[in-house]
Image 1: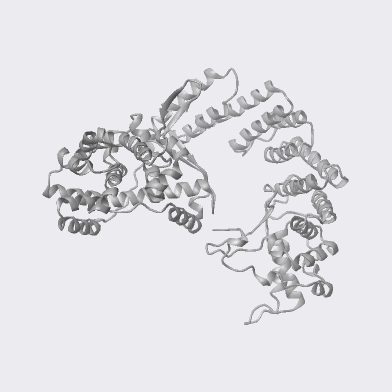
Image 2 (image 1 turned 180 degrees about the vertical axis):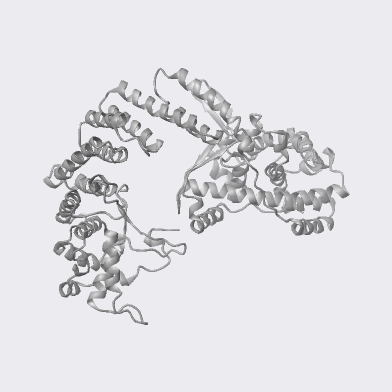
Length: 618
């Protein structure tokens, strides 16, 4: 899923760009929205779309001045308003998996921009004028007058909402809409523009005055969420004395309306107060507020009926206490409590299984193996499947995210067998790295499962049915491999003998440590320095496998190819993933871990690395 216009497969719809200056002069472009009392652009979009579609025929939209102008305005008012992203405050409201999308500002570059500017100068509807002026200035920063007009229009919209002359959609009639999220977002955008046009201009000062006024109103009314919104906005733009902001937040936390307030809001308010005190250089008060935020999380943990939820909130409380002085004993107490709670998590977890029929794959592998000599069988075994291309893995992950967006919106915590959080991946759509990382790990886990059960195990059983793979047999093949150092031939041979015999516990613990040394061995054979030199101490130490991937990845990819290097990383190093090198090195694997598809695949992958250089000699 892509939002940049240059990556969209469909051309920018000319329907949005057809209006001309003559059309604007001939059309009353505000007629469809006359009398609207809305502060939302979305409502304007609906009216313009309906007006543009009047007179539609089987051949499509009529090519009239009205249709051209209303289609352009419908596209402009449909853009997604996201002031939290100052460099890209407007985005497409809809993006489809095939690249098609709704309008974005850059669609109006060129001649259409002059048309938009003309309408911006003539518009009397405040909401429309703010959108048109902001878009024009965003595309052409030299139009400073329109930027100033955008600020004053945004501020006037907030004033009209305050006087109940304009309303936001989807708000209850009994709510004070002046302290709503919509008003906060409008002021945020106004102050973003003011940062570049001049924060001391009267329009910018007016916007700041409204921020202070509405923040005070939110806190005096005891509204938790609104206080959080406007306090954050105030600090983001350094509007008020941060001590005043912190005092007002604490007033709300003490006397505010606590009914139906989510714990996250309370914690965020305490954190917001801590931020304000930090800006005010009041270290003691900052630490006190941070501690209060942590204690709120502890209370929430105690309310939970399940161990998994309780551990989540306790984990968050411990992280909240990070950096707070004189709370070491409390952090230790909470960690001990967390360990006790996590011990109950396995009782709450269920196993979900999906049947996978690999019999057909296994039969084909056995037929191939049974036709060959022992040497051929071992080399065929080593070449059962290629390592996947990392570029294709990424592209497929992005495609999957686009097809199933709801599965990747939220962040994910990855637990070990004891319920401890060992890794976190972010959520999001499109090119979000956290979501892509999670999907690649999932798809690779499925692939390794199929390969291990359908190919590796089938081939291993077929070979064992006809041959005894002893240490001597392994050594007779491996002695010719440049991946196996001569001084470790016996160790490798024993590891693979155990692997073919089905002693996977011995195999995984023998072979996994050998991988790191062999990577260094091959790199040195190609003339690369694989040591770290300590200038001060005058000592040298070999790079670890993690350091090799961080510092010498291009050199390894030139030798082993990118797919193989990525495969090694996904199996032995990456989180999320089995991370077998870490598990073996630190004794974190269970007895059953060695018999999992990941461990079987890992042993086979090392065997493949040993045999790949020999393929060209057969």
